[in-house]
Length: 96
Image (cartoon, rainbow, N blue to C red; front, side, top):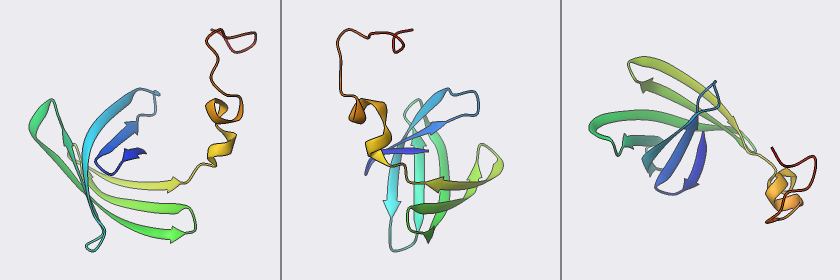
């Protein structure tokens, strides 16, 4: 799960496909509510808690199934766009 900002979240499925959601985060209650723009009746409510520095646990129901997610904060300096920078032309071995 990627949080793109305070009102956007993206879920990366096991097949690496991405699905975007609108997100409402209630820090006092410890609840994240997700909604799909394509289906206004769809909603998922996940409770969250910090398990340690850079760790977040989410529990709740999504698409009729119970979910337990353990999230770990990535070191942004290790992301290729940050560490290597943006290039209009991709040299080997970076182009596909």
